[in-house]
Image (cartoon, rainbow, N blue to C red; front, side, top):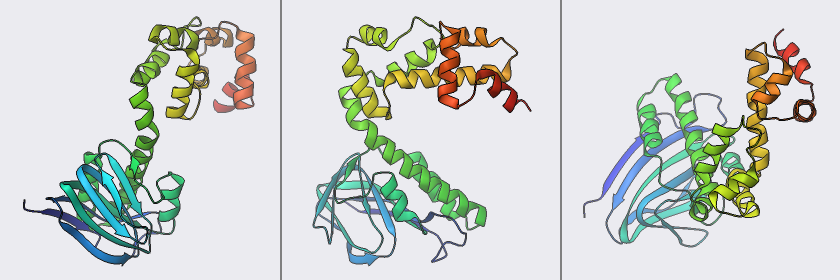
Length: 275
């Protein structure tokens, strides 16, 4: 099999603009079985690789790390890096980052460490966008490339959070859709949703929290609060009516919950934002 290397580089060695994260290079590689991809070398930048198919064997100071389809692996800056393809060959996207907060951002997204992370299929559209932005040597394009680099990090982190939960909980997307569509119904509840989905309420709550960082009851409350805030600013409806339209059967409970969430009464919120 003939190997494929597609690379695009920023022309300047260092970022030309004061951004916390800079996109330095991006590429796509296809290799047949058991081929050397990169010789061992110290790299002064962060590198993220996102496997599309096959297996990549990354080497360095942390031993050999095997990365398979739909996994991401990140080398921190200053590490020794090498790569080769596994027995099935390898197809993967990669990009490199620099800037003062590159390593910190990777860590904050939970992508640092010595093992690969399950993240789902690589976002080909974002990698293609980054390639085009690095082809453009203008300063605005450099800013756009930094934004896309951040978006890829965010997508990888989101994929890591959801991948295991989605395997266990195929109805997760439907649960969110039901909450969005039925939030104005005061009789709609998480207990009822779990019953409709055929799962126990505690199991629904545990899996939803794992996927979204909050229990479904809190998620539904946030949707209802968001609806109420919009109605307070975009309409002249009475607060009582807005409570009903946002899924609260008791306007007094709505007022207490609104103050607890925002630190203001609904009337104060409307007055402060309409100045």
